[in-house]
Length: 335
Image (cartoon, rainbow, N blue to C red; front, side, top):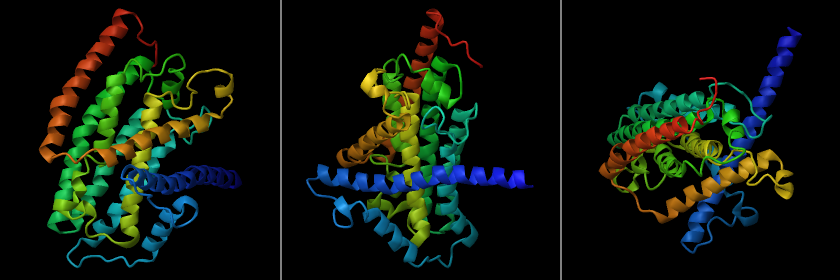
């Protein structure tokens, strides 16, 4: 019994060690997002609460905690309350398999990529539940849009991941990073990296693909009827998902925790710092896209996903497989 309690204590400690930095990171990247947006528009961005406005997100979060939660009379109360919980939980659960260094990973499973893909696909359910349970036309339209969008772009993300797996021969995220010691996959698979990045924008409902919450036509999309902490949970899940996509991009293409070049001053920097820097770099690209690119029309978004990205990634998959087979570079992995 004592051994079991010790084991339980260790696991809880590990989970808290993972969750607390993620929650703090989410607060920081919201600040960074608004700051970049401000600078692009020649404004200051948040700069009042705390040094450089760093505590602005914390102030916003506190505001949401103390606000009243209003549940519409016509809403399905159970599903309405469950929706933000599902969205936030799934966004945080996915981080269990992300390795920050060779030793720093909560759960080192052999099917890490499959797990990530499955959990990120489940994220659609929280949004559909929120939109349907609100019993209002705007949230429902927003939820339908979001579901269609996420499912459409998951297909091309899946094929892009298969490109990387062909080069590695393993579904383990650590193996994917270690396989990039000689050459990061962003070099041979650059077109796939670009498509992955754009698909990640669509997958996380970021501008220019923020159609589900298009203010001009759908008020606030599936979040319209939400208030207080439940609204904040949706928002937290959304940013945790964005960070997750940045982490996936850095693991699959940018060599994860590996330094840029394996030489003296660079290779003494701790591995997690490299990983954090790469995630930050990708997030800065996310933030810049939000500030620079105008919103797509819905039919353009769907056309891009199905008629451009899907055929192109399939053709590239065939080219990658042919190249690896012809030059006898197929990994002798555990497939």
